[in-house]
Amino acid sequence: MNNKSKNDVRYMVTLAMLTAILLVMTMTPLGTIPIGPLSVSFAMIPVAIAAIVIGPVGGMIMGGIFGIISYLSCFGVGVPSAMGAILVDIDPFLAFVQRFVPRVLAGLCSGLIYTGCKKFMPSGIASFIAGFFAAFLNTVLFMLALVLLFGHTDYLQDMIGGKNVLVFICSFVGIQAVVEMIADTIIVGAITPIILKVRGK
Image 1: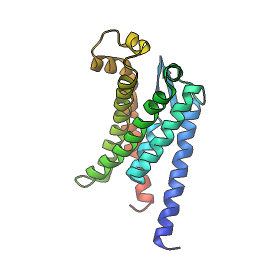
Image 2: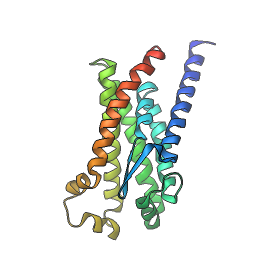
Image 3: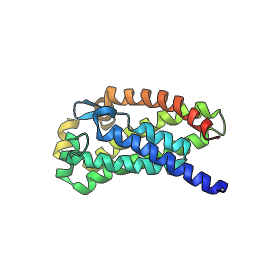
């Protein structure tokens, strides 16, 4: 088996393993802690690991898988999303866009951030940074999409309650976003250098 074939097999095995972990985290309560209408989710951890170990495309693929699972949760599949169910009732297509696109972009961008950072610093430090931005971008893009696509609806207007949009986003995600960012930064930063070493990178 030549080097290209070995790399292809390694790529597929890594992607399959991370997908399995993502499915366990998103389809069972193991990877989610419900807090009000939102949930503290650790699903971006395998997405960030894929973005670092496989590359930006790997992050984008895993982000897409996460986005599809997130959309299915609007219908009660896996860990149900109360907010998602309401958004689907308002507009199923926009609900899909709001759930899917931010996760794809977060996976892609965290991979690009890692690739850029490792040119100027050790890969271990770059892993911590990419882990942080995976969670950060997921939260920011998710909330921006929510406001942009559903900000005109009575449902969201009632939630915003006349607040500044930035204040609403910060107050709405609150402790959830902080926990996710801390967890992603620490876990991704600790695990990925080990995986990269095993893979000989």
